[in-house]
Image (cartoon, rainbow, N blue to C red; front, side, top):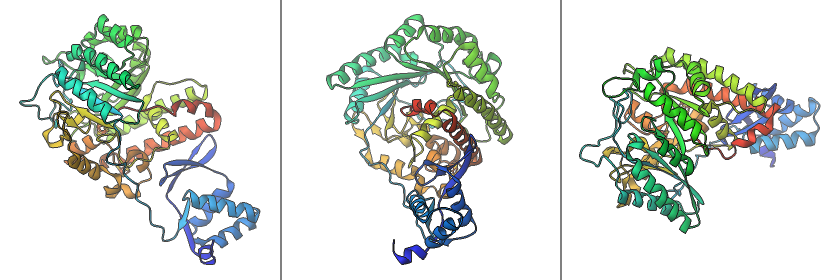
Length: 483
Ligand code: SF4
Ligand code: SF4
């Protein structure tokens, strides 16, 4: 290092300090990585908190504190490499976006835009819907489905396994097509020496023994949309006549969990005003019904809707998330898996060192296709003319895709630039941003404090597990979350 560099003032880089299992860690924001803090690192941070200092001055002060000059130099080099310390005039490098021809990994096929329920909060049919299905096909046909499978296989070169998620409307309203797609997709993938992994999301009302058997035989992962015990589930998950759907789905869900033997069954809960008792909902779905995992997401809506969760409701949700997360930690320290998937999903991202340019895979590794063959950034934008990225018959409109991705890039979200949670959040869901702010590229600023609190909690859980039972974390290396 030159003499000028040695005396040039250094300052602290961007990181979030957290504690876990009695140890200190840094979450390194430019890299999305975790770095353990020992007493020497703590000393450097303490010195630089007093103000900028030259490199040689830092070495001298570490030596005065009892470290050898060699150790001090090595440590400072390491801290510069991982950007815990940076030059005073350091300019942050922008995070590269993935290339425009990023290979597809997952296709969400909305087999129908019809549903046999009328859930008040539904983003497809409710007051905040972005879909414009008028005049379009209600059910996907076989030709469109086959073309969609071909599209996925042609756009995913280099990937040995790709993923198809069946979605709706209510997915099982087009079960005959689903069966044909599984057969066709398996044949086409096998011809290429590749594999397809299938999953579906359903409201469970139409599950039958035959369907469950098919799902199990074909290793199709199942997520059931379900909001808890009857008094909570039936508030908004209703048929068109207003009757709740719990009584219809409970026996079907039990049969699914009992007889689908090849993949774990997951519940996905939408939290709304009055449906925020996360712990009670979790207990019912996990322990009474037997779901393998339960994941929670607050409803996506304008803040003035009756079912929107207000600020105090979200505080209560966060308290309950903390309670379940503490329980998760107890399980993990015993080497047992807890079913609260919100923790597992975040742990997986931390372990994989995720550093997102975009909040999710929408329009990158993931796309949605609607019954008419329209291509959308993800399943939530299917059938929306405003957000269409082309059609299966004609291909992706690369200009529209680039515009969507450019606006959604975290580097273009002003408020996120100084936020330590951005490697994981990257501004949050594009669809939620559109519903809230009318722009898919807007940062979801209504939940920043919430996200940072929750991310900090998951970091502390990570730290505690890595200090006390690091083997537990190995299982998350390959885990992927699907929103
Ligand atoms: S949306 Fe908020 S929490 Fe998320 S990265 Fe941006 S500023 Fe941070
Ligand atoms: S996070 Fe939002 S935009 Fe991204 S895939 Fe999920 S619903 Fe779509």
